Amino acid sequence: MTGPKNLESRTKHVKATWGKHCHKVLYMSSVKTDFPTVELNVSEGRENLYWKTIRALQYIHQHHLDGANWFLKADDDTYVVVENLKYILSKFDPEKPLYMGRRFRPFISQGYMSGGAGYVLSKEALRRFVKGFHTGECTHFSTIEDMALGKCMETMKVEPVDTRDMKGRQTFHPYPLDHYVIRRQRRPRPWHMIYDYYPPIEGPNCCSDLVVSFHYIYAVQQYMLEYLTYHLRPYGYIYRFRPDESVEVDNKTNKGA
Image (cartoon, rainbow, N blue to C red; front, side, top):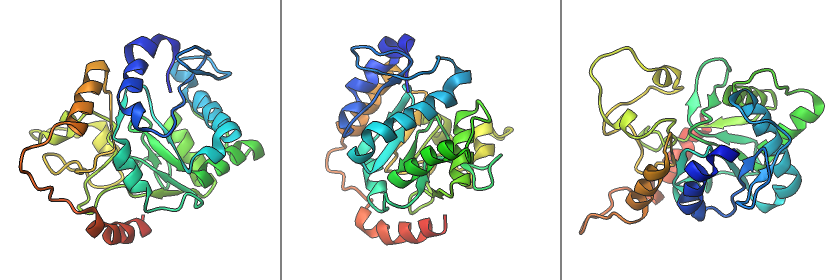
């Protein structure tokens, strides 16, 4: 999700970093450009963000439904570790109605996924979302994009997935790493910790070794995370996480999500 004013300051840096690791990237905007961007019939502005998301998902359903099993919505200031996302998705069936990301608690009975952290719809979830607007079961009842989409997911019986790792650490993050990894002195909890569906964790155990996303990541930080993700390695370090041992545990956890 992007717009004309962000192509130079944000979107080109997504294209040069984590966008290269995707199977296919579509840059959704209000105008068509040679960047390239897809022109959607919607105006820019935060008040139109949910309309933009609706139109984008309808466009993907019409033109790209058979091109992928999973569909990630991300903002132009989100950083995504695509390989870690693929690992999480590998344990699930895209023909089931599934919806995953950073799960928030308020407003919707089953919760909803943070828009900034990015969220993923299975192929069946995308079908149901588009069907919901075709039948009128889903409507543009709010300008709060992620919450409104979450309501449609609940209405269309799309199941939210627990994307925490086997140690209960989060993989999708609506803020940069420093908001989580530094244990703060006692204070009123910030809104995003109050919203968390699962018990929030601050400090070094906040975040999974297989992090998927961080939000509010701008130009320079995109390249920093790209380097830290794909190039920095401590010499002689033996990786302590064994993905093959976590699959059974994660599946048991996710069945109860």
